[in-house]
Length: 304
Image (cartoon, rainbow, N blue to C red; front, side, top):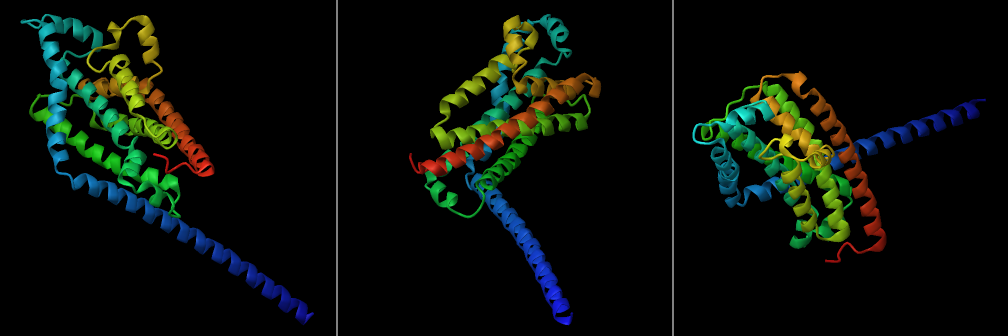
């Protein structure tokens, strides 16, 4: 009896030891992943800071870019602003300067994300660091998520500087609830970076995505109403715009910023934007996983 009791005690201690070891390994694995994530974020932010010419572009470009649309709007409004009333009937606001500036800001956001985060793996390949990074024990998706967070921090700085310049230089005032504006931005992030995941997957598979970037940003500029209300588009073009998530992001952002309609005015757009965000981010995530497995099986990651 005593030998059997001792044996059972020893087996119980062994099982407890194995479970504790498993928990420790899981915690250690999580710590390693977080450290890897932080390393990628720090690398991306460091690279951005080390090139001071970016600061000039971040300060100047947000103001220069919408001026093309704003001067066109002034010309169409006429010397006595007679066209502003028609514009207000179509958009719900007579602030056509703010309307165009905010639309151009979101267009700049997705454009910059596609060129930076969407081309992250391509840039790593051009630097000659993709293969060495890919061979580390870090999960590849952690590398991409870290790059996405680093890029998001950069875009937050660009966004903040742009809105400040709009206030100081273009005299664009926040009319709505700042919390609603923040909600629109937060719900737009998964959508934009979900598209970025898809582009990163295309880079691994096709090696070059410049044509797709031109196509996507062209569709956003034409179908999403960057500088004009969607009501002026033909019916068939408005139908296409309903399938593009940036349509809802731009409209909700303008309404939250330039009008005091509150949550009721943008609730439907927020729900649709949230659905697009979940769907695109999920599709982008699994697309990258599938492409990673395919590349690993074929062994053509280093093919330039």
